[in-house]
Amino acid sequence: MQTFVMLTRVVPEILRTPAAMEDFEKRAVSHIEQECPDVKWLHSYALLGPFDYLDIFQAQDIDMALKVSALIRSFGRAHCEIWGATEWENFKNIIHTLPTQ
Image (tube, rainbow, N blue to C red):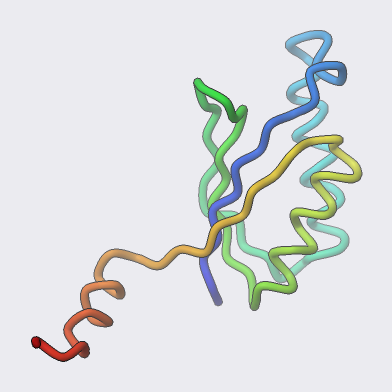
């Protein structure tokens, strides 16, 4: 499984009330669970700044991550950016395989 970070900015028109945020989450989770049952959600955060949410999840491959993004964009009417990520220990293992000069 690969780890992905998804930043989401919701279209303001769909968040007319605070309760609409929770409704957005429920609809998004429902679609993802139905269409991408193998995706494993690790963390979700509300953000201050240009994005509303940051989610960290694992998917089999980039195609499945793109499917998650497409579901959020189409059913949630939101802008998403998905970035690949690896744990710091794994990154250190990778750089230790590089030539020293």
